[in-house]
Image (cartoon, rainbow over all chains, first blue to last red; front, side, top):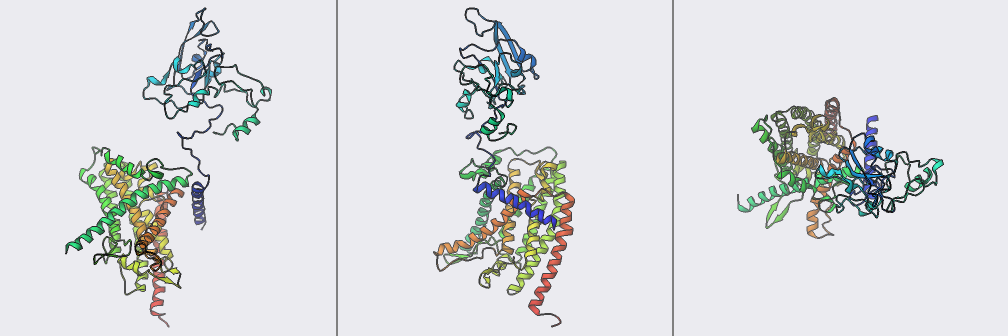
Length: 219
Length: 358
């Protein structure tokens, strides 16, 4: 009879779930293209090349990102700045910057390696293409414009919410010290063009309070 | 046969055909929706209101897809099998009365495909025929997984058909005590369940034959190869089972047959145990056309209650292991059905003829 009791228990579980789904808030899925979930703060999305608020590019063409990339998917070629009309504040700038998104494993090591925080990751993740060539993101596709908008291959795509293209501040460093008491309230990052004005590091408690759940949840 | 009579026979066949096709469309959609609800998902919601046209869309898609014929198949059997699956599925439902007879222009139209006096035997025969389709499909595909699926189907059908038949016999014996002599006609069995006991309990066979109902329910789930008895098409082990090598419309026909079988087996369970179309018609208080339709409504409600049990079990239970399936069939259901048949028959004998020592 133990089997029968277990059997009825199982039926009760599915039955209850059904009633909760139909009449209550049991639903765990969202209507994805229509409604989007808030992505976790440190979501590893597509990359973006940042600018300083004055419009200068942050990338100095040092190729550290290319060197650290475990998937060998970044190709950078630096070039000397024109002294009269410099592209970046340094000596050189990233003349060619390509990321092959088909090979990228979104580990974020390039972001870690970058000495000037030129490359960061956004929370954008919708970049399917119909051609392999389109998956190789070039400087034009990666570099934010002067206002700080993130360029996108298909900005008219129904999956893309225009608002998301304005948030280049998804994630900065895997070792972002959020939650470490020593860094609380300290402004950690340099300013970029556009809305990505990094707020001071919140404490772990603040993060938990705003997201309503702990950081390691999947949102 | 006059033209009117021919027309009525044609109309009846057409009604069965249409009802089954519509029921299949609704069934597949309902299954996906109910499973989704039980798994806290949304389910199909794109095609039509609440996604109800999803099945139509899927059917059209399959219809326009290429029917691939693999090189190693036994062509004749391979082509025949889908039809062998669909035709018995339709024929089973021909026996089931799905409403009260009504009259058009002086001709009585019985809402049943065909009223055979051996209705139940025909149902058993046709449900056995359906196994041939699975076996032939499995064998003629010339591939290992379908073959395994086909072999499993044979063993499973033989095991569970016995229990199903014995549960039916108990009902037939009981039903014989309710009217004038024994009958195998489903129309007659439904009519004998009309009325109530003590004014409010419906005279369904379910109450005196509750054990037979449980056995029958388990057996029809196994008979239609549904979870948790779907070893025939166990995806994790056999890819798709017997229909692995089928595609396009031929695959759709197997799918259609499966869902028609679910519906017609549920309809037979409703007919045998839940009184079929019998139920209150409120002839005094509602317009005539409503009281004419109500029996069909009762029938569909009862059938869908049982179809819902199919879906509920599928959402809940994991698939049985092969030896568990056989153990349940041979050591559980068949002995239980035999014992129940003997017990219920003896008790009915006592009631009918009095105790032999009395």
